[in-house]
Length: 136
Image (cartoon, rainbow, N blue to C red; front, top):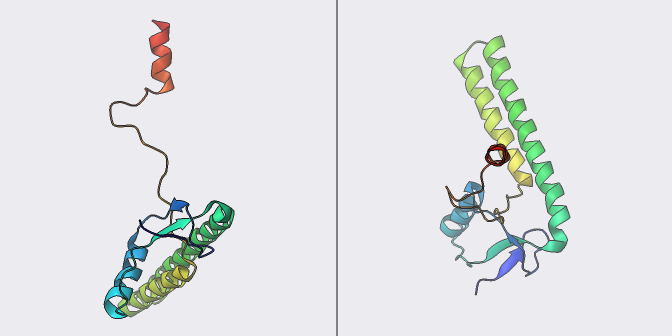
C-alpha cells in the first residue's frame, strides 16, 4: 500500500489527496532526472486536522499568483506604451515570468475533487424542467 503524507504537517496520515498538476510533475521530474533521487511512490494528502491551515495557504497562494501576474502584465503594457521597442516588451515578459516564479515559492497544490459526478445523461434534470413536468 502507498504511504500518504500530509503536505502541511509532513506526518504520515490519511486525508484528501492532492491533485497531480504541472508544478508537482515538474518537481518530480527535476528530482528524478537532475538530482537523481529515486521516486518514493508516496501519495500527498491534506489531513483533516490541517485542512483549515491548507485553505488559508491556498487562498494566500492564489492571491499572490494573481497579484504577480497583474504586475507582470502592467510591466509589459507600460513597456510597450512608454518605450515602444521590442526590447522593452521582452524585458516586461521576462519580469512577468520572474514574478510568476516568485509566486511558486508559496505554492499550495489543489485537492482532488472528492464529490462523485453523475454520468452524462443520467443526472437529475434542472429544477425548471421539474416544475414544467409537474404543471402538466
